[in-house]
Length: 245
Image (cartoon, rainbow, N blue to C red):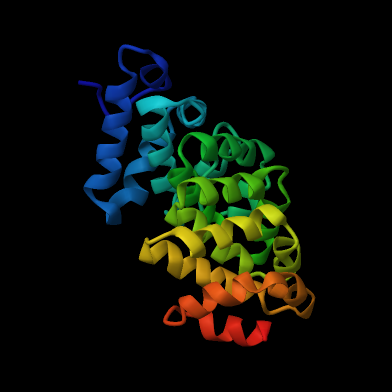
């Protein structure tokens, strides 16, 4: 059994990799309330975050486990400042510093392709201010990767992420003028039966109808009005529909 905390060598060695990742995940999930106290012990191991960041790029079970661990960590806002280092994937309370690291966002572009639900979960955890939302939006290829994940997989966290981004007034116009984003949102509302995915997608669409300059493009062809009409019971549907009239 891999001892706690595992080392970077444990994570990177094929013979101990899966066990070490499972140990990390087990400790993180045993007691969510104690997570902020548990992980700094492991994060103090040289190279551990870099090893996790490297593994999260990979396909297969190891990549999924690493991305799952990072998704858990991204939800903890009280971790010690050492987790905001740029050694690997910096996680912690300084979200602006986290998303300002282009290497982190580039990692997540790859992560969305391999594990869309977990990678979008990590990104959604960083959507805590207009500044972090702007940085996420502006990173090359990131929004298009999320749109592709939503279109192809109808993942809840991709829909939730667009809801978060669409809540920023500065992003509402560029998002609505991105054909990949509008196509993905329409695809969910026209062909998905997952209630939570639909809920967040309707809310995102409603946010995007707020600016005057978005309404003409979103009213064109009547498809957005039709889907909002079909989902009238969802939060924001009536307001979005009124904006498109």
